[in-house]
Image (tube, rainbow, N blue to C red):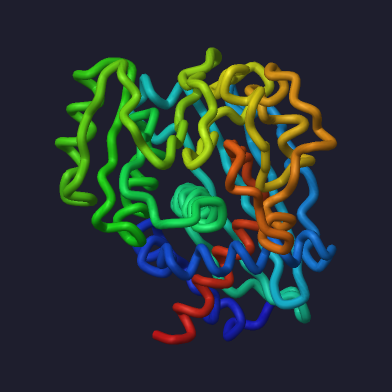
Length: 309
């Protein structure tokens, strides 16, 4: 039996507490460091395990370990919860000390995922653009779009953010509901404004963005995480340099890249561009598929914040 004192030392963080620990600027730096470590083999982050759960649901198991800590994110996705008026995603991130294996804290899984995913987008923007963006376009009006609005406001508070949904009514409603998160929100219909960054945040099975690729406009794909999903079309992909936060994961999960027939040997990692730099004279597409290494990076930020308190 574990000692009572060890049990008492475990920090239990609900969603609000987890959010308070995960500063977006700190997340960007931690993810950049984790990307370098993963490329060097200093972080082990195996492919996630997916098993069925209930009627139509899945359980996702995602561990990662480094020299200082280990994490295990367990996420349950139950689409039927929409009809039950319950959250579709539930989960938890367990953080342990690498040397002793002792559990240090438990973090809210969906909050960690939402914030670190938006932070990866911020890191891509900082890395691939020569100047801070003045105008961005978000495709999607779901939870991940909300996290991206928060993240953009934290780092680029003066940037103008256009939002496109299934229809103008949905985009307008999203902007009105989240005006307190970022004052410069504007709904758009079919026309794509002249923006510096396009971020797709949908679960579409057909491309929602397929414009001619242009240098100086960064396209970031976030939402398509299954082979049968696609957000970015062949027209955009065909003339672009393509990067992925985790190329091996993209081979199995990035439906838009799979459908677009990209040459995988040409897909470079986030760590590669952080080390080698990038040719900004070419159009760029960055695919974000996620990895438990980013959850480990988030756990480091949370632990640092807990220590400071």
